[in-house]
Length: 219
Image 1 (tube, rainbow, N blue to C red):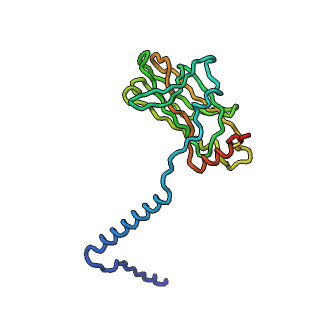
Image 2: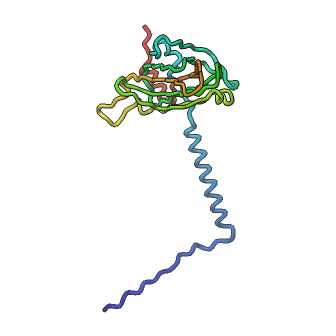
Image 3: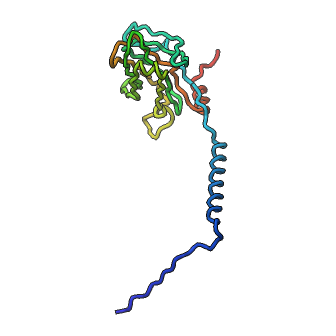
C-alpha cells in the first residue's frame, strides 16, 4: 500500500495591529455605512401620495343598495379631526365604476357614531369586473372605538388591478373596475356610519400618467 500523503494545515492569523485598531476599523465601517444610507435616502426621498380619484365626487354616478337609500355628503369630526364624509345607512352597499391608476392605494377613514346607541359595524371593501367579485378588506369598528380614538384608517392596495401584467389576456388598464363599499351591522343599532375622505392615491409619476390617459379634452 502506498503511504497516505501527509497533509498539513496552518491557521491564518490576522496581521498584528496595535490595541484599539479593530475598534477604529469598525467605527470607520459604521460611518461609511451611515453615509451611504444617507446618500441613498437623499437620492430617493419618500414620495407624498397624490390623490387622483376623489370618490366623493363620483357618488352621483354610484349604484346604491338598498334602492332609494339616503346617501349624504357632509363634514364630520371625530376626536378633533374633520373629514368630508359619505354618510350611509346600515346596511348599505355603494358601487362606483372607476378606472384605476398604476400603483394605486384606496384610502378611507371610517367611523361609527354612538347615536342612537352603542353598535359594531363591519366595513367591507371589494372589487369586481362585472364577472367576479373579490373581497379586499374587512374591518369591524365599534362606536366606542370612534368615540375614544376617532377615525379608523383603512387602506387597500389596488396595484394588482392596473398596469402591465405578464399576460396576453389580462390587461387591467383597459377596464373600468367596480369599487364596492359595504357597511353591515354586527351588533347594536347603528342608524348610519361614515366613510371619511374616500379616495385613491398613487405616486407622482403614476398620477401624471393617469391624468394624461383619463383627462377629458376641452372643446
